[in-house]
Image (cartoon, rainbow, N blue to C red):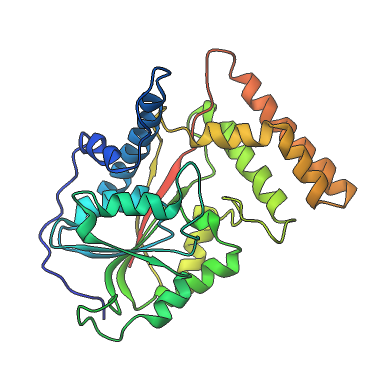
Length: 313
């Protein structure tokens, strides 16, 4: 049975709250080169995107939320705002606290803990499967509960080691929460400027499939259809879905396309792929990304692809 909490009706978060949430995160000291403004523009775009996701999920205040793959807490902060002072967010990530730059996971999470919503967040540095197995059989206020109102997988599935990892996670979560909320890239581009992001993601995923030691951010390139089928096999039922076209300010597509366009991608092909036909396919995939970027012209920049937002029961 899912955990219960003193919940009230869902109340949408105002988009303007994104500016406040962005300031919860680490920011460099302002300088004459404008680094502070540039950094905060990135944080603002990330926070605003996640406010849109959380509003589509309709999480009521007072909810107990389990977030899988929280990373530095970009989504965690928005979830903490959504659940309010009576709610709780258990944020789980297996990454080392020393991982990340220019700030580590540990530093970023510590700053969020010191923010106005920090008291609503409990960080857990653990493999999600092990965390679930070790969770207490009942919630006695000492440690994580055995179940939650909702579990969130927000932009984390592509980080999983393989589709088998996703299937095992979905099965382990069944019965631990009443609702499963998912947001992941849709592999579609409503805007032509997002086509390079789609192509780059596929190229990156194919390369990492040939690198057993990969820790890249795209390893499990699951489509909405694939995620839905895996969820159904684990006993979850799709309750509703939406597609979000990210604002132009969200830079994820530009970052990913730039990574594949770089000469370093060719070096990675040489380092991890031995078969000549596969090397040729990957180089051609890179060429397709470069061509799609060139087709946008000098006045357009790469945009982030569509995002699939779903709710399962």
